[in-house]
Structures are given as C-alpha cells and as structure tokens.
Image (tube, rainbow, N blue to C red; front, top):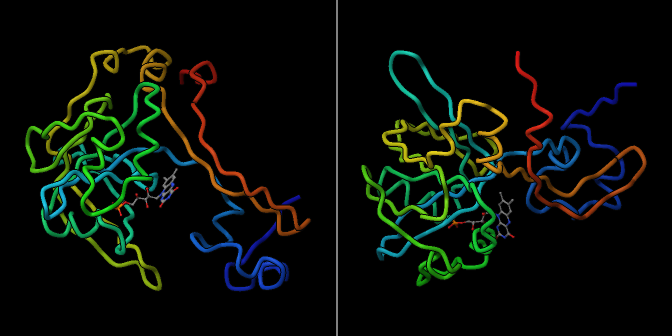
Length: 218
Ligand SMILES: Cc1cc2nc3c(=O)[nH]c(=O)nc-3n(C[C@H](O)[C@H](O)[C@H](O)COP(=O)(O)O)c2cc1C
C-alpha cells in the first residue's frame, strides 16, 4: 500500500497533538527521514577563531570537463553562513575513524570558542584556502563558493562551490569499494521519526554506519 502526503494539507494530528513538535524541520521531513551523510564544515570566524558546523545536507558532484563541486544547503542564521559570506571559502571534513570529540563540536558554539580545540581536536590550516580543517578527519575538500540562491519561504540557501583542493588518507585510495567504505567508516544520521497515520512518534534521532558487505558490484 502506498501512503500519500501533501505538505500543504497536513494530517490532522500535525495541527493538533503535534502542533509544536517540529521546531527544526517540517513535519514531512520526519516522515521521509531518509538518512543523510554527515560531515563537518570548518571556517574562520571574523575574530580568527575556528568554527565547526556538523552538517548533513550536501554532496559532491562533478563534470568531466570543468569542475568537481560541492553543493550545500546552508542555514542563513548560522555562523557558518556568515563566515562563508565573508571569506567565500569553506572546508568539508569527512570523519574516517571513531573520534567521539567530533560530534561534541555542536556543544561549542560561542563566538569566543576555538570550536576545534574545545572539542579536543586538532586544527590545521587548509592548503589552498583561508579556512581551518580538522586533522582527525581523513577526507578534506577545500571549497570556493561559485554562487548561492535563496530557497523561497525558507531560512536556507543553496550554495554551489568548486572543490579546489583535496587531501585524503591513503586507505581511501583502495580500489576495492568495500575496503574503501571500511576506510571511510561513513557516518549517516537520521532524525525523530513520525507515523501520522497511527500517531506514533519516536523522539530519538541517531547515527549509523554503512555496512560495506551490503554493497554489490554492477
Ligand atoms: C546529525 C546532526 C546533529 C546536530 N545536532 C545539533 C545539536 O545537538 N545542537 C545544535 O545546536 N545543532 C545541531 N546540529 C546543527 C548544526 O551542526 C549546528 O547548529 C552547528 O553547530 C551550527 O554551527 P554554526 O552556527 O557555527 O554554523 C546538528 C546537525 C546534524 C547534521
């Protein structure tokens, strides 16, 4: 059986019992809840301190002739957006080993904080852009902004950037994709889940890893 949901005509429970349940995302996001890949955006604040933003709404794409680029949906109210506006650059850091301090970066968000050092992590300068990166991460994408566009009725913009420089751990060059995935230790996240048909809600979000054994060669 297929279930249909129209964002403009929410199920009764959304405007009733769940009226104030979704302060961060639209209720439909909690219906879809397809896991996203996690990464960390690093930038400099205007006081020169390191800024970290745990994020999951972006991906790499590419064109054979011209560019490899990173596309990002970014909240205009965050510090990262301000820093990217000012500097025109950012670094994407992908986690490749269990580093508990990484997720803790969300708790260090004050203007005066060195958000990398405060989480017990090591900051190092990017090679090609004016931004910091997190040494404990195994894949760094140094990006320069090409353009941004507002998303109507949203506090987000879509931001397209060119990947200018890449640094990765040698293990990620493994041509066996399962081994490569093992080296990535790819982290996915999901959010609070709802079933508006039954009224069930699971307030727990979380994260998980891709199981390399599940991948098949085409
Ligand atoms: C999986 C995941 C979990 C997050 N958890 C939190 C959180 O607990 N608290 C929070 O304020 N932001 C959380 N965020 C959102 C941003 O990481 C966070 O707001 C960020 O610190 C904003 O940084 P900025 O203002 O420096 O750009 C989370 C994002 C993701 C992808």
